Amino acid sequence: MPGLFDPVRLGALDLRNRIVMAPMTRSRADEADRPTDLHVDYYAQRADAGLIVSEGIHPSIEGKGYPRTPGIYDDSQRVAWNKVTDAVHARGGSIVAQLMHVGRIAAEANRPAGTDVIAPSAIQANAKLWTATGMSGTMVPRALETSEIPGVIEAYASAAARSIAAGFDGVELHCTSGYLPAQFMATGTNRRTDGYGGSAANRVRFVVETLEALAARIGADRVGFRICPGNPFNDLHDEDPAETHGTLLDAIDGLGLAYCHLIAMEVPQGLDHRALAAAHWRGPLILNESIDQAKAQALLSEGAADAISFGRPFIANPDLVERFRNGYPLADFDPMLIYAEGARGYTDYPAYSPAD
Ligand SMILES: Cc1cc2nc3c(=O)[nH]c(=O)nc-3n(C[C@H](O)[C@H](O)[C@H](O)COP(=O)(O)O)c2cc1C
Image 1 (cartoon, rainbow, N blue to C red):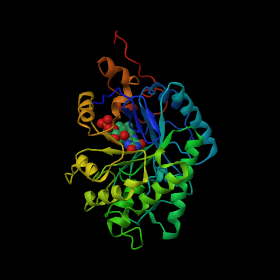
Image 2 (image 1 turned 60 degrees about the vertical axis):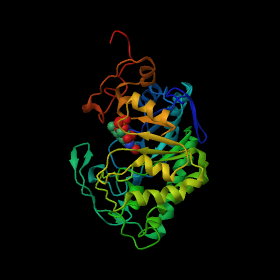
Image 3 (image 1 turned 90 degrees about the vertical axis):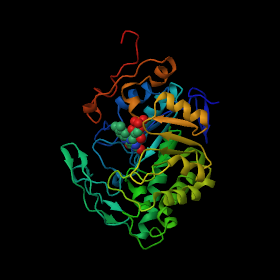
Image 4 (image 1 turned 180 degrees about the vertical axis):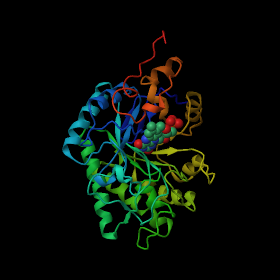
């Protein structure tokens, strides 16, 4: 019966325990979309995790959606990320880069100068986005021409190659939360009449081709992906998310990808995420969303997952693995500092000490 502290292999990724740090945007990158020395400390502090999934990293400048988020589309970013991955590896950890392209989730204040807002269809999101000056409405996206899609996929593939060159152990394709891959998959955001719209097989084509391109560039066993069927975040609506995601999983099941990272949360259409994955996915599975240590252990014992990811618990508990191992209490984070600048609320949460 596998335990949380037992090692596991997901594709080519060797995890020393089954505790994964979930991806979390923290908005501390510099003006050139590079991680800083603060990132080096932040990720190194959390390197006891079996695997760290980085914050969302935009594969191209067009993919950026929020203030101070990092990219991996140029060589100065590669050099900066290399310091992060070196620090994690020096502590015996593993880290993958989450590739996140926001597509239509764009606010004027967050937009890099001169970039197009692109999406499968020209449908504006009914959402409010966080910007440095408060919440803001969205922009109307431009529908991608069919002939442009290979270029968008290529940007992901070269970002994956650059991630490996930066020392990451792999990449995770962000396919939920209303961002570009999810926009292609959902009926509410995809009204295309070419081979990327209409049937479920067509709507998942962008994600399938992107995963194939990532696999071809860096090896399938270093590529994971993240889904949450039915997630309505960022004004996403799909008429039949179970059919769409079943079609996706069937199409990629044979690629030999490293893992599926499934957010099994309650969604308006009331899906049984674990049953969906059991029916359509035979590869390694990481489960997420509001899971505590006891539930994590129960899920592993039942064989429901190979590893469990934790997001919010890692914010104020850099030593989460040690706290779990020793039964130490967990600290709470300050919500006002999640996306703030600087070290406060980022790298200054201490490891547990008995005097706490
Ligand atoms: C501050 C914050 C930032 C997040 N940023 C991302 C992100 O960049 N990419 C992503 O896939 N999920 C992101 N998430 C979602 C988390 O990865 C995770 O799914 C969520 O927090 C639920 O897990 P938990 O209950 O263990 O916190 C973010 C969550 C939080 C709290």
